[in-house]
Image: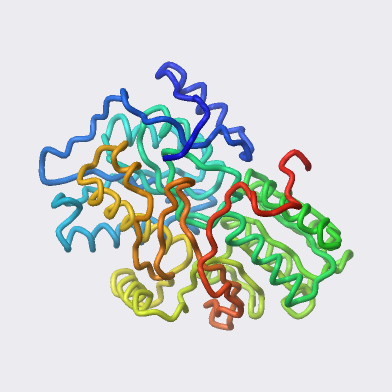
Length: 419
C-alpha cells in the first residue's frame, strides 16, 4: 500500500475538489495513495454473470485523433478476456463515455461511471489535465482508474494505476540519447499549454542546466489552436540542434505543417516527439521521415506477444490500422486489472489495490510488473525514427525495463521548488 497524507474527502466536497483539480499543475505529493477507502459504500453489482467496466476516452474534440484508438484497444482486450471466460467467471460489460477532450467533462463522466453506472473500474484519460480533473472522484468515491499515457510524473495515487511511462522512463532517456548519441548543445521546447508540457519542460530545463545544454526557445499553444507559424519562425531563427516536442493531439498537424512550409525537416531541424505515435504520424500530411520519437512501445517491436497483438488489432479494425504506445498500455491495463482481481479473488476495490504489488502480464511491449508502492510499472525506454511509411523503427533501447521513479528521487539535479 502507498503511504499518504490524510485527504479523504467528504461527499459534499467532491464538486469543489474536482473544480480545484482542473486548475492544478501536478508536482505535489498530495496525490499520494492514502489509507484504505473503507466506509465508502459501493454500488458495484457482481451478483450476476457480468461486471461493468468504464471506458472513458475522447471520442470527439482535439484529442480524438489519439484517444479513439485507445478505446478500440480496450474493447479488443475486453472481447478477448470475455472469450477466455471473463474475470472471475464474469463477462465484462463495457460502459463507454466520451471525455470530449475537456477536463471538466472527464470529471463529470468519471463521477457518473462510478456513482450511476456502478462500474468496478475505469480505464482512460489522456492529457494530464484530464487525469488531474478525474482524480478527486476516484479518491473520494474509492474507485480505481487505469491511466494509459506517458505523463510528467511527480504523482502517485492510491486509486490510480499508471501504465504509461513516467518521466524517467521517457523524457530523461530521450535527453540522455540526445546528449550522448547526438551530442546536442542547444534545444528548443515546443508544447501544448497545459500540465504535462509545462512540467516536462521544467524538468528538461533543469536537465539542460546540469549538462550545459542551451535552451534557445520555449513556446506553447492551447490544445485546440494551431497558430504555430510564429514559433516555427523562432526555430528558424535560433537554429537549435533539436526541437523537443510536447505538443498533443491534432495540434501536431498544424505544427508540422508550419514546419514543412518553412522548409524544415529531419535533416535541418530534427525533432524528438513524446506524443506522436503511429496513428498521429499517419494523420500528419507531411513527410516525417527521420524525425524521432520517444516511447516504450512501437508496432515494430519484435516479440511473439506483439505479433499476436498487431495481427488481432488489424483483423478487427482493418489491415491499415496501426498500433501505438498508449493503445498498447491501455490494452495491457485491462489484463493487469484482470490479474489483480483474480489474485484478490474479489472485485472489492480495497482488496484489489492491496493485491496489486508484483502482478505481471506478458504484454506486447514485454513483461510488465506493477510496483505496489507507486502504482507504476517498469518499462523499457525506446527511441524511434519515423520511416517513409509513417511507421516507427527503434534506433535505441535502454535494453531492459527502467524502474519507475515518478518523483525523480534518483536525480540530484532535480529540484521541484525551482522553475
